[in-house]
Length: 584
Image (cartoon, rainbow, N blue to C red; front, side):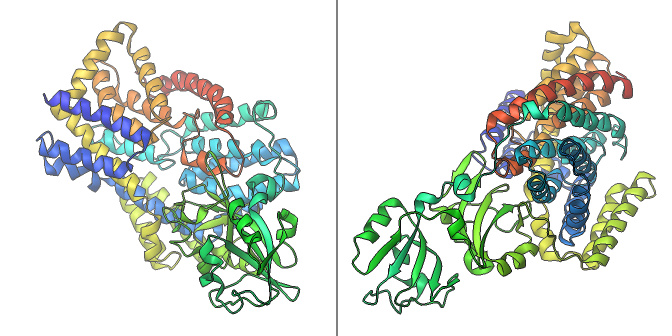
């Protein structure tokens, strides 16, 4: 009965993780509650995963990476490095190498977010379509994560799990050589085929990219209009679902604030639906100056447009523009949004923002420059870097390096060295404590800690033993090598709809049990599954891929076209090299 319960919950978890109907942390906590109430695991076993070393390591990495980013060190270094190469082909390969190198020591998504803006800016200087470079950047960040223990959360989670099973935890550079082979293979593959496989989507103007022309218009307020004297954002016009973007008064452009009032003969740049525009035309006191405005007419003199990429750790995530008081807090007007899967250009104020959303905003050049230092987004395609807190950034980098060396040489446990580095980073003022709690990905920590406990439930119930024996009956005659290949293929498929860490932790208990039944090395199976989860590049559901989806104007098929053949090549390499480094 317990076996049926655990396997049933496993199937439900996979479905819920794939559909994302409920948040992954909510699903994980629900699983733990059911398993604990059923008596499959004790409360101590349910929460043991949350106190493991690898949870401390992951949380510390989020803090240190955030500090390196917010001091401006990575912005400055990344931007300067990317500007070095002037050849288009060399630029693609060089950018992938830099991204992969940084990703070996930092969160993949953070690295992708850091380099996306400078990469787009350099593409414009080289007359190269960003769509030729951004998928390679995302893939490089993923493959770079296979080089070290902390390169990706999946590596840390798997290391922690096998340590709990009595095996030795992964050494910091244990997977370095095979990871470098994966990264080099990805770079070589892209350089050989990027001209043919990657799309060439020209950027076009803002109008073309965001399809905003049909919603923009200029209207003139007559002297008899009841709007004269009304506060702009409390006016009758604002209540009609019309967004007032800019006011032209006596040949001067400005963006209204909360105290601005209308005056006679004001020309208003507004954004509204076609139906609302028709109703405005029928209002005697308002005159439609032009039905559509070109992008070049929207931004002139000191009023400019810019694209903002919502980055990891942003305080805007899961909040709407209205809830975040975007216009009031940043003094910028959001005109339109690009999101994974399409463009949104109407009524975006109520949409919950997600990582990877790109906002088209309008404001003065001064306000754009002021917001370069925001922790909530990065300016796409811009080379200007954040204010560089030189000493604090360098101090953080040195402390991080010392922590890695100390942990690698086993002078202290890696969790202790990383936690100490995170603490010193906060004490140095490189990042404030409130920001620390925003940067830590609590959902991921709950997911990993909870799924570790789920592995315990599979062992306690005998579910992992049952599934392992079933797999051995079906595939055992082919030998351990082919059984391991089956697990790697399965984890590659599972990582398409699920997070890499979740897919790996779901399969690990069964894979380890299967290896023991076959008399094979469980560590080899575990590392193969861990690496298999990181070389799965078929669908654009990885956060790094979602980040580049809108800026690159990609379609779903673009990732399959490039990622599928590369995944097959990496799978073959994995099956050839893993048994060499970790004999079966």
